[in-house]
Length: 399
Image 1 (cartoon, helix red, strand yellow):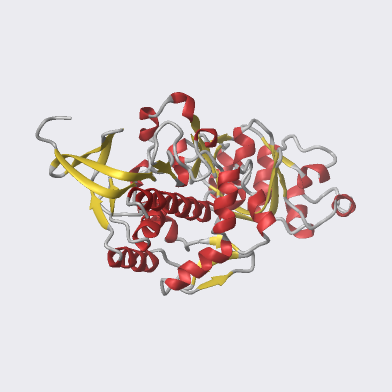
Image 2: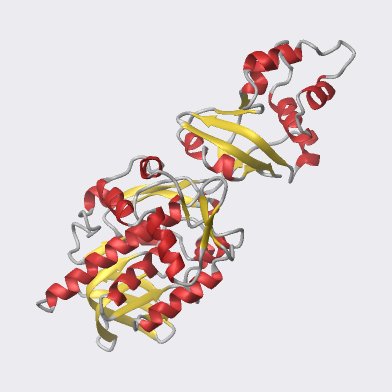
């Protein structure tokens, strides 16, 4: 530390102003703790706002056992956080910010406005009311027993806090603030390597697929190893993307083959008997379109991955093998696996090697599909870390 570096003492420090960090700050502020939130970007919660542009999926309204099964594995600290602040609590919290929610047909929960910005504005206003100070363009460059050092618009600054919460995100969407660079300053043994999660797939298409770019493939089921989904996806110039694909991308990452059932509601024997009705003069594509009501996009996928066509096409339609698929680069993934290992954290998410420093959100080594699970876990772990940090501050005050 240079001799003239500005040093500021504060009761609590939160590093990162995404959903996890803001929730930690809310818990600290609610407890009457003096807290500073340091954010590297010019504005808070940029990834949160980006996610909200297509409809902010807050959580999933389903049985808690089913909900928890989406986190595989689910370490005890994460399970405790989710049990304390799960789908019901997320919905109530959103409503308390003046943003009522509704549950869609699939159980996904959204704010009625379908946008993130009104919710974020109300949230920031609540934090302001608690006296939470948000420092923008403060980039962490060092953290040790003497405090946290930041590069700021006014030069280097050091914050000395009684309790610190780390909420610096994973390693995807670097342009929105999450680049995983913090991991290089941590002991390597404490970090599980980052990997893409909820990722689009790269494929090298033959020329005939060009006219189908942008086309949606709906009403299918996908299977890749242990991972299954029922949904839809888009054929893009670079490959496949969309919710149905994201949910099984972990299987691709783990080396399993990807299969698509193009007729998930039609049993194999019915598909077989229908195919037998094709007349010799009728093309396969025309028959698939008329008799099995396959869309042009589905037919194109069959032609792309099953030529030469086998005499028995039914198994192909019920389990089209997608060959050559790889994950898109990690920075393009919706989320990342990897991060701080739970075996190096306490039950309250405190770092084993750094007392009174807690971590939350996508910094932690957990993984879940899209559909409200990601945001709920960020909020839940942020809440747990914030509560634990406030306990540290109160204990230091002799309360």
